Length: 137
Length: 466
Ligand SMILES: Nc1ncnc2c1ncn2[C@@H]1O[C@H](COP(=O)(O)OP(=O)(O)O)[C@@H](O)[C@H]1O
Ligand code: SF4
Ligand SMILES: [Mg+2]
Image 1 (tube, rainbow over the protein chains, first blue to last red):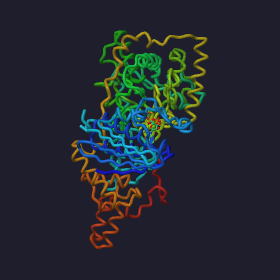
Image 2 (cartoon, rainbow over the protein chains, first blue to last red):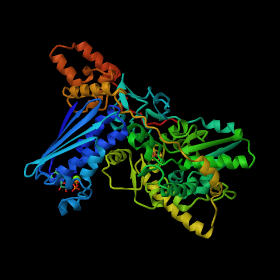
Image 3 (cartoon, rainbow over the protein chains, first blue to last red):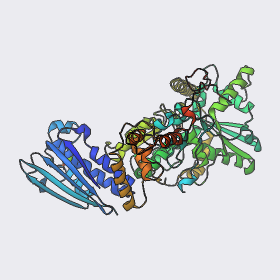
Image 4 (tube, chains in turn cyan, blue):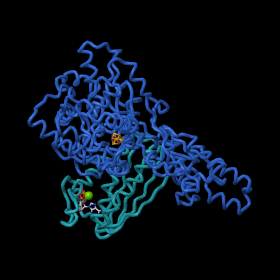
């Protein structure tokens, strides 16, 4: 099954829409709640990152009985040093974003922790593409 | 326990039900369908919250109860009444008079449920301090919420605090006390005066324990009239031998919104009303809620004073209960009393734990993930054809639920009135067949003239039978 969602930069009010929808699907197809939780947390963080750091983005999800593959790509500033960005607590979030309760620098580390496979590709000045996979059994 | 074994206290009276869609559209778990002009409840989805009961225009949703006479099968007839009972009566009627009236009606022992909250508030705080179980802790108080979590939020079942609610604690205590007094176990009948259907379901098919410690339930609206009658016909009813309840004043407010939250340290939230609960649990499940230690959630607006079997307006009842709690505080400061239940702490410690609550997801469209996935694909395909207006004319609450019912082979695409109209125009469906389908969903009567319908010329459906 294929699903697609749009995510807009700055639109924190709607961050979490894609992860909620995916959660509904996974619940209906009898996936272990613990696995669902991991997927939802990872996807939510990825959505928030588009809101916080990029201009616009897209979430594409493919679900098979074995695995869920997620691609989150955005047009945005890109990440100059991915290794640094992956460190817990590292954040370039603006004060405005922090005031809204985001920007603890735990997003990418959480995505890493909650997925079975993660790949990040980024071009400074163009955008970022994050791919992750969770096995469903 | 399999889904078939779930006991529900809400039943549709097929004589009265005329197949309107009020209940179907408010049901928070989409558990209701209309077939042949009658509402049917899908047992595995029902959480006994009573929303259907509230909105039924002809009182066709009924709450079962045990025969009142069955109390006389026991020598010691104990009634556990909730503090909300005292909020039903005008302030001129005292708690002592209510207790006296309950005795007059045949109970030998009358005990306020919230005595159990004195013990529970301590036990829960200890449980939370020990960091047992998953955080945030969710109260086990409201059975409709426990069931909601089981069917709709299975990933949160381990967050439910594994402690019995005050009702069960009061029952465990009272039974033990009578046995210690030398009363034979078979002579003891413990009854609960319930403000809602969910508590009945909890007694009849408990979650997290093998059998309930309560022998029967009496509905609050049933007893209300009788208490009132006793007090009205015996204005000077003798209350001299009756003791003022010995619970802490805060426990009187336990079943009100914030009643639990006010007792605990840490970050606590209180949520009431079932749709609010769903909205919140959805976010909690997605980890979108900042860290909290404890969550009190009740299915009714204003918590138990909003229970479907209450008689008084919930806001008025809340105010009265708060006033009573305040007066009780003053009373206790000049008349310090011991809650006898607290002397049974060790017994309660041993008997008031719940086993882990098991999920029973109603959402799973097929246990086999492979099949589920193709069914879900099919649902999405069907949604391309259905109009998305959620009109309910197919006898299901939404286009989406029709699509799911079609995939589960309990409904047909032609059940949709829009599809049917189009098929008729395209002559792929005859007029007769179209009529038959409407009849299958709504029954024949809905197409006949009937001056006794709600709002019609000779309507008199509102008279309540007793
Ligand atoms: N989609 C993105 N586009 C640009 N920069 C990003 C993106 N995602 C993450 N980053 C960078 O990586 C940093 C760390 O991200 P994360 O761990 O999610 O923490 P936070 O979002 O709280 O800052 C961010 O502060 C930002 O500099
Ligand atoms: S809030 Fe109270 S009255 Fe309402 S369903 Fe829950 S336990 Fe029953
Ligand atoms: Mg982030």
